[in-house]
Image 1 (cartoon, helix red, strand yellow):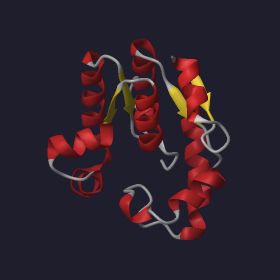
Image 2: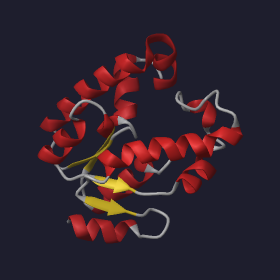
Image 3: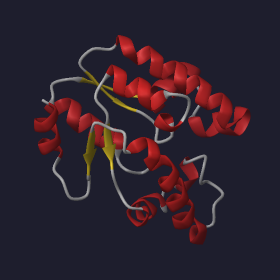
Length: 157
């Protein structure tokens, strides 16, 4: 959350002359409901089940950069599925860096919408510690604040 997956994914797709799919946008287009509203009405468990189904659908896409949600690799066997069917990239940032980015967009993020600002960095740190178990299984680790996306494109291309 907040690492720039969508923006960097679009740039990477352009550099690789590939298509781009943002799974969050795909979800919202298909279900005519924002993820924020879906979480409020149906909860995270139901969202994760649908997210898994959408991920499985991506196996049919060729020459496509796919931006998943930040939690996608951490549920079911999604990270194994991603690695078995494509190349995965972890956009690695510190909890402090993510906190700075997320402070201004909390209202749009269902997991942090009600969180007091003073608790945000601690929550992000805990989540990151848990999620990195999955993220570090990625084929490539990219540091968005210090590396150039063109270098990643060369490594992937």
